[in-house]
Image (cartoon, rainbow, N blue to C red; front, side, top):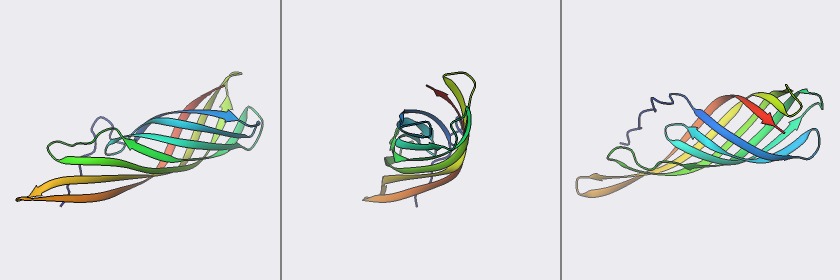
Length: 151
């Protein structure tokens, strides 16, 4: 039986810090590459592609976005048990609004669906025999994000 590590008390909910650097093709369509740090049951470093479409060209505009990529583990062991985390795919479609409060800065609010897969292997001993247990954790979350946009 594999015991699930307890949720972190420092970050009891999925917390993230992200940065996206992109290119705006026109006033409505943009694409970028992002990276960050997220905390599920373990700390992950996602690397992803961000595609975004703004519905209007105004200072206040609704948008849709799609992010997809891979999350790499930032830790590999838990107490005396040997865990090897391999990371997994991530996917995040969302809708939101963007409003400029100066010529070069905007506030961005979005809501979406967050899918994260984390593959892991645990090696432990059952008497004299080494047992290798592989596991895939699937995280399905509603994401609510507040961010800043700098041009």
